[in-house]
Amino acid sequence: MSGLIFCSFKRAAKPYYLESAKQNIYSVEELCYFLQDNIYLLDDNIMTPEFCDWLETEVGAVQLAEKLRRLMEDQQGFRVFCMQIIMDSGYFSKNEMQFLGMRLQKMDHQSNYENRKIKADQLMEKKKYLAAIAEYRSLLLLATDSPSDVRVSGDIWHNMGTAYAQMFCFERAVSCYEQAYELSHRVDSLKSASQAVCFLEDGDRVQSFLQRHHISPEQFAAMKKNLSELEHLTEASSEYGKVLKIARLAQVSPAQAKSEMYLQTDAWKDEYIRYEG
Image: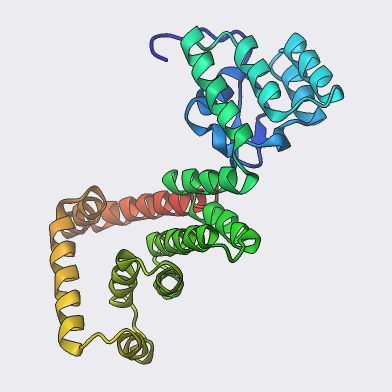
């Protein structure tokens, strides 16, 4: 989809909250834009009278709302419900509608477990880490002892470790990576656990980890050195650049630097809040 899109319906004053995607939408077009790349983040929880009422009263999509109500009365599934929105929106080209139809059909033929795993992965990609962790944990409760489920569970534990590491919760990250390694024996899970351990300040916890995985003090020292070198390489990153700019500003204008520091802190707070969605 490219070019200028004219909205067929008005923009809502009151947004509709997509619970499964952890996101507000303000128009049919915004919903369609979301559907293009995030269809796995939706589920049949959108099939509610409240959603139909929102379409009718907030965005003026009266006919679409009525069609969706009839589909729910006829007990049609999620795929049919979504396709009705896609077809009536006027947003998609014929090829795009066919592509989304095939993707919805694929979801129909996949298990609920598979679809929810993809949903959790997409939440990770969008940096909604807390929401992703919650979804991953619920998936672990559904896993069986079959080899395929054990492998997927290993991947889930690894992804949870990454989510915690991204939020600087290194203690939990280490535990998740270790659980992943125990299940799937992926070398990168042990490597990630070793990297996360380097950020722990608990000496006993570090020593316990090193002994459990037969990592010598020399190897651990080399790991910490490698991480230090990586940190040095990231000094030109955008986040480090912001901090460096404030530090330099403080030398010439402490008051202005203090103001900039508060603004940057608020921005980081907002980013952290988005981890949950």
